[in-house]
Length: 501
Image (tube, rainbow, N blue to C red; front, side, top):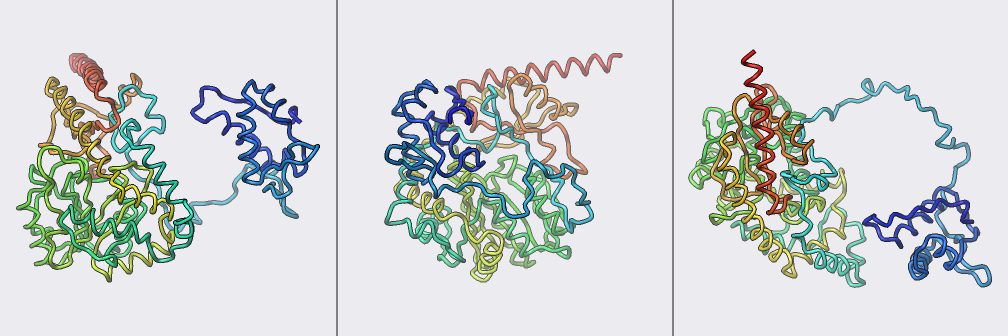
């Protein structure tokens, strides 16, 4: 039987040897290499063949029996179980290796709407392999409470919660998570809301997508910040072409009443503006709310990175100052925990949330129950608060180191007073193409994010880029900045030579 299987264990892999053995047998069964009744090698024979301990093989076999892929038979040893989910070819089905590789469908003619192209910030999946990753929105695994999250996940799958977490919530959300958001998270932002005003979403972006599809069509006029979150701009541009981008100053979005008076929707990130991290002043927040009430436009408030404030206390959310129901509040748990969590929430008036809940139901029903309950335990048991304290402590130090390194570099200029967030928005000299800088820097192990995608494509400057410090270790920041400066200086010398010719 060993000759029918391809065994190749990788001792350097982060996947355990036991898990690798299980994966090999599961794949062989699903691909019909092994069929029900086929005999497997004994644990002794397989351990000798692979050069691993017999206990490792026994644990792998036991896990396969628990999931009914294999079974142990007297005097026969281990065999593939009759209940194993062996792949079957239905009557008349053509095996995949016999399918034509030519696609004769003209998909451009079939599509009634095209989702591509979009302008997005590229984040390499292998960013951890780069020595100096100044990239935004990724998790430094050394700062995350792994054991606490794992324990909360186990608790969510325990007998007491199992029926709730694995069931279909329908229109509803996990009441434990909603209760925490209502009683603990929102009050920190000065917001009072009942459960009927709260909708759990697959991250903040899912909330923005729902709001755009419910509120925006081609007749609507939308105001956004310039620069702004690229995905938000793309979401809105698929609903309307009537988009106006208002510039920023040190107090946030500049409120042009002539433009705002004609607006139907205003999208804003007042806590830490994306991508500049500028915090909107309290005075301007009040002025924006007064304009919304006067001209009857809605505000979508993406409370971007409000937890990451190092110098001043967080300003009150726009929603907390809203007395007329004009603000739709969007929050996220993914930013402060880990981006792959994909959990956010929307807070608004009950009639709007009911519509958003219905649309969410048609799209994806609800976020996974186990994920919601795990997050709820993580929050309720105090792990979330401890996680935030740990993040703030480490990120504040990284921020100080990066700020000091930037002060030594005359080519790069910070564009705003930074009270928090996890990145700096950098302006280079007018001649700098940050896309080329990023390309050259990546070749030497430095990752940065060119800033052109944050601007309107018609007028995007090329000399801006974002430097994040959430993913890079503190002791690598100075060296990474020095290397990035050297690369930029080399580009400057090359330009000088070209001009001299």
